[in-house]
Structure formats: structure tokens, C-alpha cells
Image 1: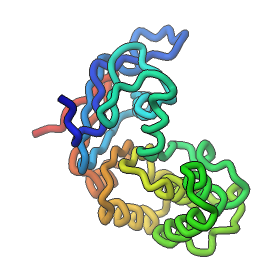
Image 2: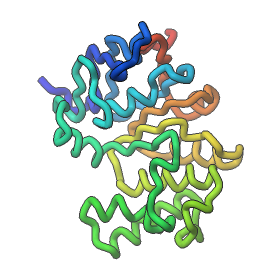
Image 3: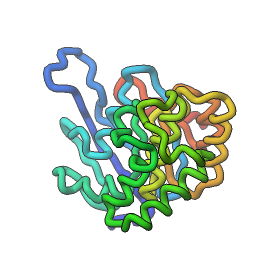
Image 4: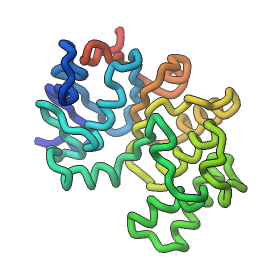
Length: 225
């Protein structure tokens, strides 16, 4: 029987890039379950597979073996992941992978428009999200002229504008000054999102998550009791 409270369930997921001759797999028989309302952190060294794990959940990569179940449905083919991408917002590690429209307003409105919102509805959502993130006045800014920290916040705005049921955030505090990091912490704390965050910043994870796992040697280590 499918548990409606379980959003993500990975069972025996293994992954290696084609042609990778390294003896160690990127992900090795990995299990993970995240239920509605959970706030989970993921920590690990560079190259440990955190980003790869996120891409597998979103269908941007396919596992070598294992099962990916999201919102109670087994996901295998491209068409299976369309619902996943509509309901789970992924913040990429590199903001330049997320921003592709000329202006901030166009980038933030792109998601809602793609989900069938009218121009008026998308504009309203855009303004609401930018205000929420303290980015009033950024609407007509050119995205390629933004600083690294500003791009990070605009990337988050594009994710929030989709009104997802869950967030997956890959190094969300990278490039942000202390004041902006604190603002982001408060936004996450005050939200009702289920989320999974990868970060090298253990202090940031302790402030924003309830459980922190370590990804090491292709496997997830449960938190210490």
C-alpha cells in the first residue's frame, strides 16, 4: 500500500557515469525516504554524489539500477518525471544553469507561465515572490549583470514561483553574504515546505533542517542518535 505521506523513496539506487573507470560507484545501493513535512540536510565532500542524487530524483539522470518512487509512482521514463518537476522545485548548484531569460521578471515568471498561468497571474506571482525575498526593484534588472549572490536569490525566486510541494536545494547559501544567509534561513524556517538541502555549511544545515545525513562512498549514513 502506498503511503501518501512519503514523497520520495529511493531503494537500492546505484549510479555511475558511462565510461567512468573508477572502481568506486558514484552512488552504491543507496536508500532514502523523505516524508511530507520533513526537513532534511545532506552533507558530503565534493564529488560525493549529492548533485547526482538530486538529478536522479528529478529525472535529469537515470540510475544504473534501483527504484525511484516519487509521489507514490515509480519513475523510469522521461514522461514519468514531468509531474515530479512540476511539484518539486530544484535549485541548481550553479545559478547560471537556472537563469536564461534577459530580465529577472521574465525568469521568475517563466515557470508559472509554463504551468498555464495567465500573464497577469504570472506577474502577480513574480511580484509576490520577489517581495518575499526582499528583491523589490529587481524586476527589470538584467540577469547576466547580477552578482553571484543576487543570482542565487533570483534562482530561488524562480523555484518558489512554481509553488512546489517540496524543495530540493543544492548549496543554497553559496555566494551569499551573512545578512542574506540569515534572511534565507528565516525564509526556510517560516515556510511550510518539505525540503532536502545539500550544503557544505554545517551551521546553515543545523539552522534549517531537523535531520542531517552524510553521503559518503556512495551511501547515505543515518544521523547519529
